[in-house]
Structure formats: C-alpha cells, structure tokens
Amino acid sequence: MDERRARWRADNTRGRRNWGREDAGHKGRYASEGGRSTEMSEKRERRGRKGQLEQLEERGGRKKGEAQGACEDRETRIARWHWEAVATSRSTVLLTHRKWREKQRQKGSEEVNKHIKRQAERAVGVVREVIRITAVEEKREIPENAGVIGEERINNQEHTRRG
Image (cartoon, rainbow, N blue to C red; front, side, top):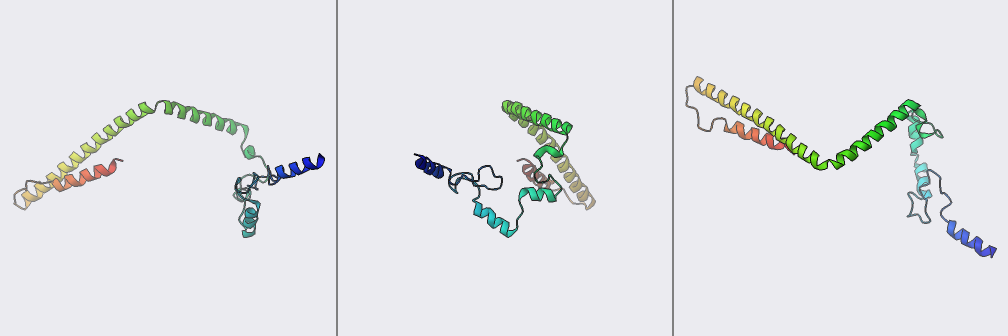
C-alpha cells in the first residue's frame, strides 16, 4: 500500500517541484503548461540577461527581497489607492454612459467642423482678395474661378483633420 501511494505521489508531483518559485516559469506538470521551462531560464542566465529585480535594483528601484510597495509611505499608498478607486469608478460610470458619450462626441465634432469651416471660409476669402488685388495691380481681369485652388486645398485639409 505504501509503495503504491509513494508511486502515485511521485507521478502526481512530477514537474511541480518548482511551484511558488518566482523565476521558474514552469508551474505545471508539462513544460507547455507554464511560462519558461527551467532550462530556458538557465540559458538566459548563461547569456547574462538580468532578471527584473536586478534591473530594478540598478535603476534604483526596490532591492531584492524587499516588499513591492515598501518604497512609498502610507500617505502615498492611500492616495494611490484612492485614485485607483476613483479611476475604476469613473470608468464604470463612463461605460454606463457610453451612448451619451457618443452623442457628446458627435456634438463636439460638429462644433469643431463648424470652426474649421469658418476658418476655411476666412482663408478662401483672403486668397480671393489677394488674387483680386494682384489682378488690379497688373491690370488684368479676375478669372471666374478665383480662389478655387485655395478652397480645394483647404477642403482637403479639412478631410485630413477628421478621423
């Protein structure tokens, strides 16, 4: 009986020896189940790439073996929690108001388009005026499509602005 139980245990714990070890990405029975197999991490060590903790240490972050949030004091931690909570609640509210947001966005884009149109009209006016002045100075008649080129260019710009 004992022998059978031992064999069962050996079979069922195979490949799970490195449970809970941070850098052994292999946490299942088969290599494909977990992150990296241990041989991969060994290869990585041989190549000399550093783990995340070591990188953090070099950049002056937390030291190895130090708890994650130990570098910030109580106030900052509470503030961070507060803002995270605010952010999540905000996102929930925004999600529930998605339709309303869509409407607002359309309204906004209409406003912007009005503004762009107004600018375009003003610019076309300026172009026409310049053409008129030069024509008067050079004593030649103003062509019918004065300022059309300018208008087209401005309209193209308007299209690229959307989107």
